[in-house]
Length: 213
Ligand code: ADP
Ligand code: AMP
Image (tube, rainbow, N blue to C red; front, side):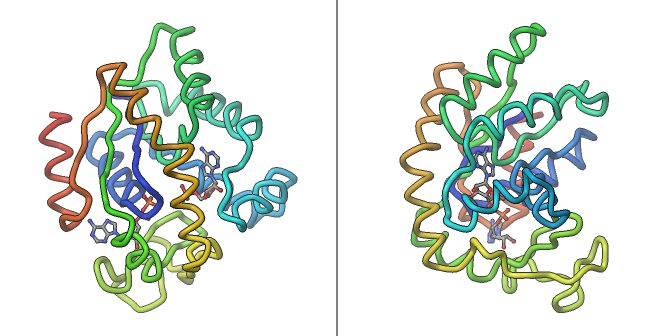
């Protein structure tokens, strides 16, 4: 099962992608996590990506597309994957469609997690992230068992640099301009469905698995 998660930053894509990956035994591939891991390790890619991420802008397609095509070609992705945060532009979606069709494959589902902008701004200030394993928490809606510590790997949780309110508004503007058109793109491919992302985390997940089967 090949799945793409769509939705604004903070809509809950990562939260749901992790649950889908666990239930169906497929890898969760988050471009944001890959960039953050590169920033942490101080790689050349990480240094370039950080310039854009800190400003709330998208990392250029030429740094992003090959990375994903390479990742989905790994053996663990043979039976499918959940792509979270990719594609984010029409050229990225076209690059993905092209790479897949070269292997007679296609995206089976594009899941649009819908949450209004004002709701997102409130949510993001409470997000806490583990930069070691990519787990995501929320101070109120999804708190870790021990304050400030990741349940999964024990690392310290942080407020991401790009989750500061002024950057969140900018990321939302970028989302509406560059990523929202993908809803039409995948509707035309006949694979899109929407879920109401304002519901609690387990209800959003129940709605998703009702569609995935
Ligand atoms: P995205 O991957 O779309 O940027 P996340 O999955 O990281 O979003 O979720 C953003 C924040 O909102 C996190 O702090 C997460 O714990 C919280 N969150 C996710 N889904 C819900 C939900 N349905 N209700 C309330 N908070 C949520
Ligand atoms: P995320 O963790 O998905 O919220 O992504 C964090 C940031 O990483 C984004 O605001 C972008 O700057 C960058 N990023 C992640 N995925 C992509 C992508 N597919 N294309 C361009 N930039 C991306």
